[in-house]
Image (cartoon, rainbow, N blue to C red; front, side):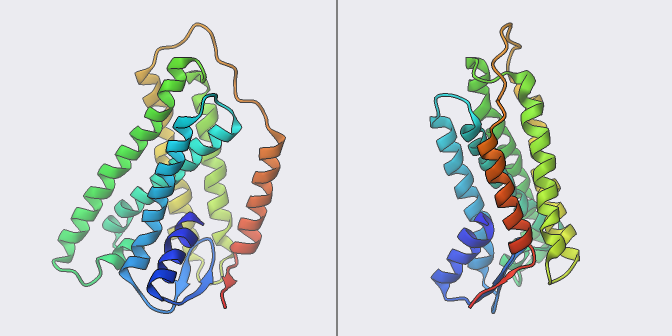
Length: 237
């Protein structure tokens, strides 16, 4: 929703482009606009950097700070990965941004290269932000796989489940759900190994992140609304 509402939606308001419907896979508009198309990924990067800034301001490591870390990582990987995705496949928002620009192959090449560099940079930033906590004893690097892999799988499944209900095309399950949920977020899988490489194993083990019922309930409610309400799509007046 950062991508669709804060990005595409706000750009529609600024440019006067009419938004027709909102779903987890797209904000459908009446006309094409380069700025509206680019605004989704830009919003992801801005939101990711803001969440990362808030994460770094924290003093202790708990559920809320863990959420900020994942939220920052998801947005940064989605925003930068979209450039690479569109450049390689000539599909999606950024393919619309460069549509009609010649030589087209050169624009695609530059976009894909920029996306690859920024995507790798995002992975390193996500890992680097957690390293001070590991070195300071707030996080144990042996817990990193537990913090990353279940979140990666759960988030991927959620982003696949919602597009399965869309009324536009089942192909969006692959091009939007799988590509965003498991493709763009694949960089998270590299984070534990990067942290392990740049830190030393501590003799004393930091307290593991505890189960938090409030966050579980909030996550469940958001997931239900995301799949059941936004999955099929909502027509806009």
